[in-house]
Length: 91
Image (tube, rainbow, N blue to C red; front, side, top):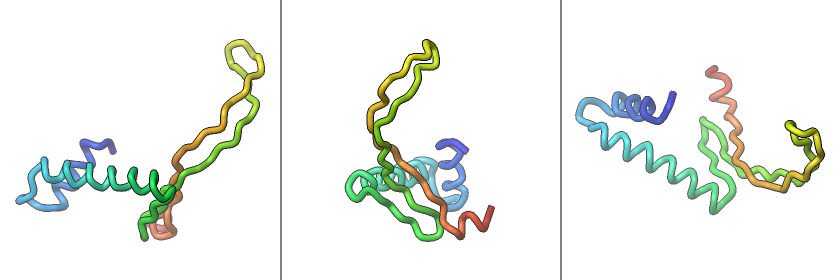
């Protein structure tokens, strides 16, 4: 499911009186709130769904696949998602 399909699903769940624009605004607001929460608190927990959390990756040695030479890979941050038990159980 992509963002456009998610917007359509939200519009269908809200009913006939909801416009596509209102559904798009709702999806955008939720996604922006998650991003803001991760930036400020490093963690966003949605009970019954899961947890978004900043993951820290240490610097490490890697290998250039084209030339085979070793190279230093810098430390970085990424976002991880851990599904809740309720979500895992529904799969």
